[in-house]
Amino acid sequence: MMYSNDMEAAGYQQKMQMQQLASNAGQQAITNETQGRVAMEGMERVNGLSAAQKTNDLFRTSEALMLTAMNSGEKLKEMADPNVIGAVSRSLAEQSRLKGMMS
Image (cartoon, rainbow, N blue to C red; front, side, top):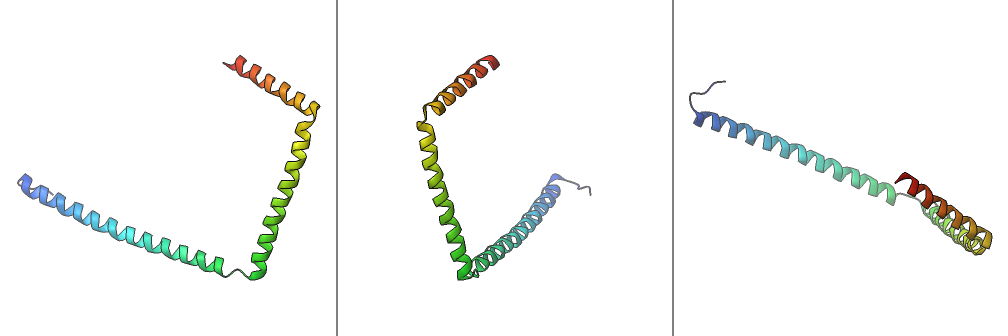
């Protein structure tokens, strides 16, 4: 569409920008509503877990923590072994040497 002067073109452009802003605002409102619904459904699902499921989840978490603690103790014992300390030291030295070669 051709206009006879810049005043009409500027008005048309402003009208198009306003329509685009209105469209964007409508799309954002739909997105916000959808996200709100998803969050509410998620919360309902979490609240719907049975007591047995919650207890089972707690047991699994406790079991995992206990195993981690037990394995940590084994790692500490292992690190006190002079043979392990020597192997780690050699590994670190080898890593440093390789880094030096790559530089």
